[in-house]
Amino acid sequence: MKLFDKVLIANRGEIAVRVIRACRELDIKTVAVYSDIERDAMHVRLADESVCIGPASSQQSYLNIPGLITAAEITDVSAIHPGYGFLSENANFAETCASSGIVFIGPTPKNIRLGGDKSRAREIMKKKHIPVVPGSKGVVSTEEEAIKVAKKIGYPLMFKASHGGGGRGMKVVNSEGELKHAFYIAQREALTAFGVKDLYLEKYIPELRHIEVQILADGDGNVVHLGERDCSIQRRHQKLIEESPAPIASDRIKKKLGALAVKAARAIGYRNVGTVEFAVDPNWNIYFIEINTRVQVEHPVTEAVTGIDLIKEQIRLAAGMPLGYKQSQVKISGHAIECRVNAEDPVSFTPSPGTITFMYPPGGPGVRVDTAVCAGVVVPAQYDSLVAKLIVHARDRKEAVARMRRALGEFIIEGVKTTIPFHRRVLENEDFIRGNFNTSFAERLNGTKPKS
Ligand code: ADP
Ligand code: ADP
Ligand code: MG
Image (cartoon, rainbow, N blue to C red; front, side, top):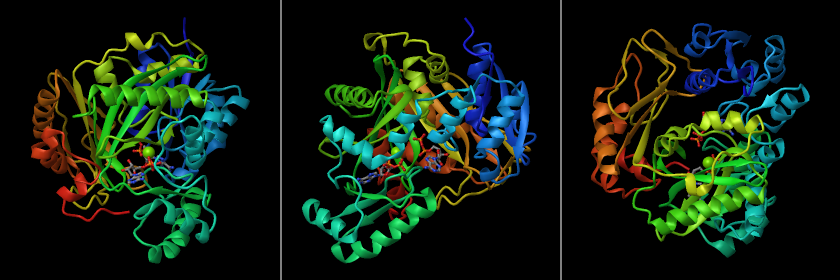
């Protein structure tokens, strides 16, 4: 049975290429969309059809809902895949698709709305006895309220934007003296960046491990998890290296993470592919932080260790197919690591857009490179700096580390600065090799102060 005849991909870059690959294997035709500076982009070349949806600015192109729906209508597609970022977590977009008779390949608008309201999601998890980071009950709307919460949980703490994402909208507060100023700044920043000023408070955990769990749900109550990913190597609260399984974590902790994630997904009637993110403190206490209602950048590490194609699963589930397996049928095999290659300075992480003059991607056993660029391609300043994902899979972590080191040694990109030199340093680091790291690791290695 054919799932869909034709799918439009409302995205660009490597994730658009990734979705085209899954569609082709499922015998589904594809439509790429592009802004007018990306006419020759790889996702446009690889798709069966393409439509220009506006000028370079994302607001007028990849975020332009009427433009995307028009493109979908003129090309007569039956479904839209949103990728990650852009409109992937926009409930209005999912609703507009549905009311235009187009299937949105993702969770329900209700799921998306809840995932996007992080303080409300916290409250729901609390009710279901899923531990959350100690903090405020819902939104804190006044400075007095924030002081009251702070007295209870103690410093340092963190203001977080309820509708925040992409590592933005967080502010660390070390004392009551700092709180007042931080409150107003964080509120203003939240309003500017996310259109909603709502903030909530969490205890700041300086040495945490970010461990998340991949889930699959069919909307009929069947939920399975595909193991966990450690994403603690971060800069500015954004991930740089991810791996599965989580190093050092005991089987007991892994089981607990999986069970909590499934419980969280059930608690909100989740459907399709999603991720439940947890903060894990140095004593292995686990706290829910948020649920991401989309495919993650780092999904390939899970694909490597489970052999499950997550994009095909998204498409199948969106087409109404039931989950094809039980938890006991999910097997984790070996170890996988992903390094995000961004066009950025490898120490300051400032963006380095420009033309790629030469590129040689690594290959060989157990190596996967997901990218949409090659020599001659311009990395635009307008969009995300991610240019390639390098993923390795091996029998165990030791071999995966050696393989990643080997692959990074082969990887050549010239013309723009990239994070490859940073990754090479991490892969040589004794603490990283031992699996002894947390979210402060990257900034410590680079000698830059952790930024809040
Ligand atoms: P993950 O690694 O968990 O998939 P990231 O935090 O790296 O997620 O975000 C994935 C992509 O989505 C990045 O391109 C990021 O910039 C973008 N993104 C995520 N949330 C938002 C948001 N609220 N606003 C803007 N961009 C976002
Ligand atoms: P986003 O929606 O932007 O992805 P998250 O709530 O998932 O935001 O947090 C992103 C990152 O910020 C985490 O991976 C972690 O590094 C850091 N972080 C989040 N909450 C805390 C906290 N309470 N204490 C310390 N660091 C935190
Ligand atoms: Mg997050």
